[in-house]
Length: 621
Image (cartoon, rainbow, N blue to C red):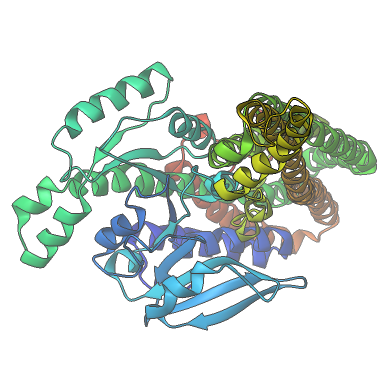
């Protein structure tokens, strides 16, 4: 994806301060701080904000995306269904690429924009599964850094909820679409509840208000449902058709009636402004932390140069601090053991929770199959099973995040000597965009025999009854075919038909149970692999983050101690010159600290060198 070339004034000011801080860190030969600050600068230079469009099937998601962009990039129509996530971003030309996941690595295949619908209709080609469709286009909204993700419909036999929930933590906003024909259903409320826990900016978009005059009553009912569920989610009523007509006719009144003005206001206030605040806070923390590290060495050397006696005391304090930092470094095995044990326990608990949820669903499905004919209700069983399993995978994902947050807090307790630390970024990447479990499907049942076959079963059973009773009745002088033999044939044939029906029902029930078990086992296998991969990423993120915290703190104290010791032996002629240089550098560092304070008030800022709460594992910008 192409990063927008424009840089907003707030971003330019942040990059200016970051550039000065990087120069100061490079002058102090602090490569560790330079790498950390350059990562922050890359985050500022990339203004992309990812917005996920989700909802059940036939809610007008693709048409909504087209109306939002004023471009027909997503296929729409009765026969056009979003089968894979479609990522739309800015680019110099309109191009489309299918990204496949194979056995070795992801592969891209270019497709013509007009053939997108046909290309995604069969997501599995030659043992490769299409993970997502990437479309780039020269569009003003996309050029401003907006990245839209049109997702497959949830529910109604589609098991894409877990895949969408995997995108939510790394998204800046999630727009859940529901048309104005009916009020929110229980599955939609459950999905909103899950998304709200993973992404702070969530809105319910009520679509197709031009088709349903009673949409205001539906919106009021949806508001009541959300309030009862305790979900502070705004409702935005829109009409994609009115928006398209307004853009074509340049009609401002029609554009206002489309409701997209309210939507853009939500995006400005809840997405763009929130992202700018989060970026400013993160940059402030990084700059303030780097300034504290740099000031420690400069201040220690300056104290030693001005007053050798105070310098000796400062050296003694630094030696004590270095001993504490070295002790913490030696105790690396302790916090790493806590982390490793926590990840091991978490992996076992997550796997048990997942299997327990799936086993409960499988038992419920088998009990229902025992009481009903699965052949008649297989589509209902499939819709319920896939929806319930998808919801269970989402709940398991939320539970994993909560447990990982508590694990991060336990690991942070080993770093109380150094004060607070910044929280690591463990948000899912593109590898979580497509859930493997979404590719698992429930096998179809063999259809029941037709009316003709059932008639033959009855006739075959009745033949024996007619023959036996007819032969016996011939001794009484009656014909082979008589009312008695025919009645016996009807009775025997009816019993044979009922016995055959029971046998076929038992067979269908057994096949249905086998299909359910196979489906649940396949989902458990794929979801278990995804869960292990997710925990491995969390483990690596926490390990690398806290290792960096310990190394940076030890490096700062070691540099300060060495500078103070060298200052104590410096010649008198050079002391004044060196003091002036140190004072100049300290003033520059103090200016950087003031810039950081202006970006983010110190009352709510936590740095590595100060005291604050234990780190959190929830995603930040």
